[in-house]
Image 1 (tube, rainbow, N blue to C red):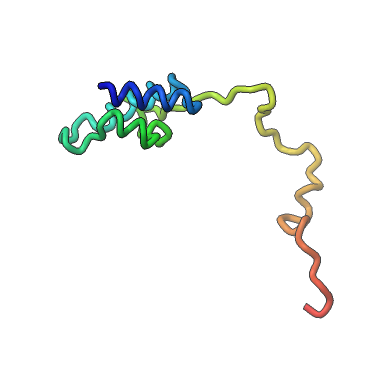
Image 2 (cartoon, rainbow, N blue to C red):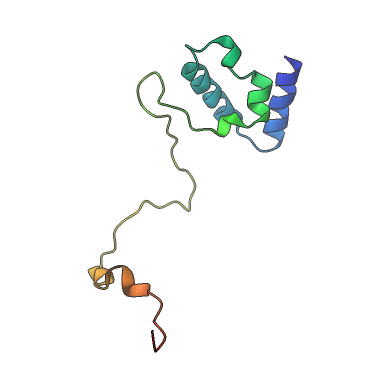
Length: 101
């Protein structure tokens, strides 16, 4: 257990979010619940290998484990009100061809 505690402290000191680690550990445990014990990654190795950054399957409620986007700079996408930006399709910003091509 000392190796796990040390790996936890190292991960958190390196900037990992403890809540995210805990959520990922629960998701990993749920994902490997039916596997043979010898194929389940040891907790210290799981932390050292930054497995908490992996994407895990949906949780027990059948929904993916999504997190909201925070911060003051985030703005949801809204389509342009001026539809003239679509007139030239994908070529509106294309590189002009040199003469002779």
